[in-house]
Image 1 (cartoon, one colour):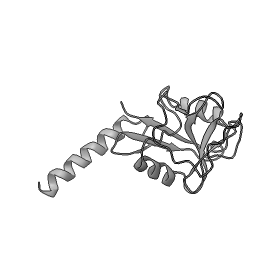
Image 2: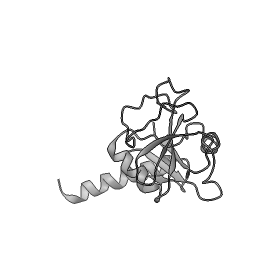
Image 3: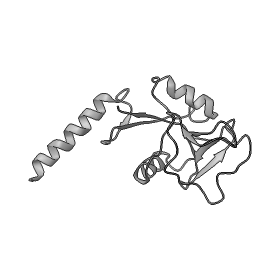
Image 4: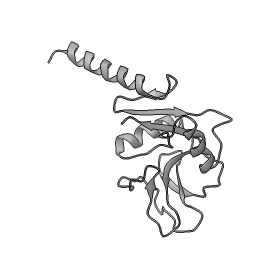
Length: 151
């Protein structure tokens, strides 16, 4: 296959994703994922505030879901070296970890010794180095990136 048809197919995929993201301000990726990193003052809020803020952009907009190693790399790059909320939670220390959409966490990138099985640490943040930690949902130390997956 010559380079021209491949380039045309890639451009069509990018255009399709850009037109389908919630707005032109979002970063669109060819695999159907859209991201909106928020800037101060919206970048420092607790987990529930972060979820509510993302829902402002649409009912299906959440915190990032990291379902694979390539997705992990993309989200880590988007944090810009900051720690950031992920859309992974559990109801309590004996509950399973689920993404906001209800999917189980089949891919994880936990820091050694994580997750802690203590009450109150039921939300997940990606640390500056890309590893995950379970943290108190009421913490205000995490950057917010909104996430939208095209259907």
